[in-house]
Image (tube, rainbow, N blue to C red; front, side, top):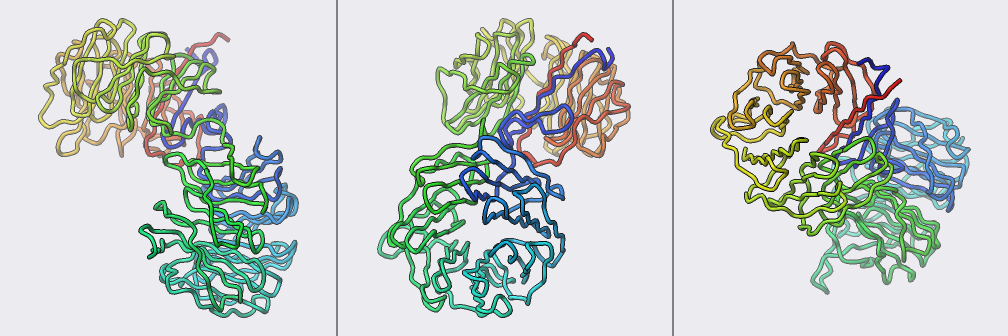
Length: 619
């Protein structure tokens, strides 16, 4: 069957990234929108116009308050962008590593400066359309007088700068710490436009400065990352510090009880109204810091807020890991999630056809499975008769379009008989925690646990029997488990020496023989089309093919230098190969040659999971 007579329907899920079909060629992002990348910084100069930056050189722009987003091109791939700031809708700056970008037209065009110094650019401040500053690690201090077309290195400050802000072209402040020690905070002030700087005294209890805000030439605020003990109570609290005389003296203010995270940012719109953010909370003050109130901002597991943009009134946008992007239009009383779709941690994926599919893992409300009926464009939670806290689904498999199984943690197994709309807890009679399930069209189902316990049903899961896997002492299941029919199956195991072993059964799992693939390196993926034709990916070696059921193997072939961690064989000679969320290639000649379908920068998912489904199409 030639490539012109078929169409591949390919779907990838990465546990860290939700469903990641990365943008390249015929691949499109399904979920979440607008991005799966962690967000480090956000700037909304108005309620309509906003910019978000983050991992993998991500720069996003919106002109409709976050309803739709456009990804802007960053000149270098793979950069973790941590700062963006726009002083109005058109004029803004981005700094990351050794890169500086400024724009006069809302990001339609950029002035790009690449200047490699002995450190990284961390923070920036545009005083007006022409005058701006950049501060960074290892004494970095840069100045522009032409809107970022040219940058001048300024005299070294002797600190690792984390924030820079000017009250006027002449008076400005830099917050940071001594370059060789992150535990000795430093605050500097200039009164001559940055030609010279003086060190200011910082309160002794401040061990590190997270951020700084300048209200006017004399009034400044700093937020400490360390948790300060309030000796008048029993808990550990955040504190903020204010100087009314240009840093000569300080007053401390208790913000709120620590949630175990550090302070990220502080900002005041005037002398009375301020906002402070930790990784999971936002606090407001309307009385110059005397009292603070926590906002009911929601944080999902695995997320962390890193930045906010506030107009000083009611409009706030907060960004962070997850990805997390939320908006408030009433001063933080209520929040709207600007991420469309789900950002939970997936551990399993299964598609019945090009339209109906499932992903399962630990969702923000607990263990669950999501179902799509339109090829991943929309996802909805399915119904369970019961769920257990802290559990997630290792794998999902269907025997036909109605009947499916999903083993979970805590020795729980769920079954559906209506195409995955409703799932019920089922009892196999065995107390093992099963990691993988294979379901065959004739009603034969196999499950295996991490400690090599295997059970089998030949009547659609009504009754189960335990298989005796006498294949060696001290073996552990190594993740690869595939039955091509009720009789023939393959699995990998790990011996006490951490070497991988490959086994085959030809009698439905009653007896197993070890196969020799000329290595004991870990098998990263295994796929068989039938009892004879299969492929394995071996760590450090490459992909091998067999046409005699594993008795002999082809020479290992590296595919573009990637460690392939998923293979799917569609016919005796046709297969797809995947590396994480970064690379997809196909072959039509048993792996002798491969055609790259997608190549992208990996975001290093911690628990990648994949599923590929192919349907033959006429024409």
